[in-house]
Image (cartoon, rainbow, N blue to C red):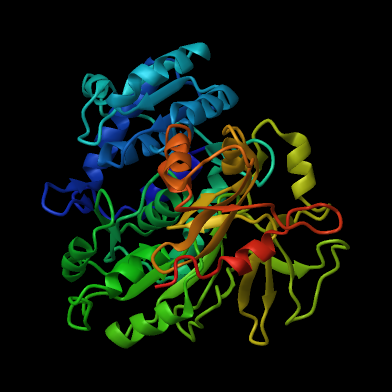
Length: 504
């Protein structure tokens, strides 16, 4: 048996001297270099006692070495657990205790806050900075670059990515080698990737979009990427003459449209622009096509399933839709209550089934069972419909998820922190249209009459306990929250009432 996922990457390699990773102005890493450095890290993992199936948690800034740590985990048969660098120590405490990793890798600046958490689950703690320095790479430098990939089958776990619902604690979505490998194979085909492609990689690598959609697709095509630490519009524009593909969130395209340098001449070498992780406004789609001659390809996926649908490479890319179900992925729209499949044009719950769909939630068998139908379809929680052309439209989210700048914000988590504040009677967190971020997080608070709270105080109180992207951009105060006959807060009314909060 070979290593199922990494074996797919090896098979796509056109040669060890081919460039895999470039930076904007630094040295390049070849495919051969990738094999050597990831081999050293894999040997270090083994030396630290990592066995197949053990979790390796990484809360690090984006770096080439951070990406190589992921590949080393795949090669060693470990389960990679990427964590957002913005998570506070309070948030990290839950993820570490729940996943019980054998190894935790953090930025050197986080050691003081994390050391007790890691030792509490008897995990080894290593460091990796954004500059590639730290005890992880120091230890790897002493290891042999040759490493025999651990045999892993299609159903063996490759990664756990934590996601959340509007209620309860965060859930670890278990993704197998075949979940990742199958989706990458399909994307290589439907997006026409070849070993001549160069992707501008400006996404984070702690979630599905940057780590799996972008990276695994490049690796499965034998292609290469320009690896940028973050999205900077002017830098991305400058890289386009060296590249052929850009993957991004809607915010990328909104900000590119604000640059005078975005013209057809600038994008003459580009063949594909992909958008996902949040809804792309139809006006952004139209404006980008007018400026560049390129229709952005929008697709739909989620942590638990990777990619489910895509607008076609050849054929109409319809603004306001996420395209057609990917080959091998079944998608249906059903009545949320009865589970009966609905005809085209009817709004219902989106359910998917296919090799891309995850194995279940880590240590949550009851939650896993609740989210799957008896016939194997996964209930996504997203509301949508099929139009008359068979294209999927996402019209809402049954769980009030807020997607801001491509990041998921789960209202219940923010509300729990708000409700802890002295004087707060109750809170409701909603997402409303934002011209740059897609949606902006808004907190609506009912406060006791004898307490005075203002917006900066609330935001400051939450800053130490929540990642920055989760913080409310606006905090609004009301006498009481609107409720229905069953006493449930009517967030739809709040969204309508404050829809113009961020209007320009």
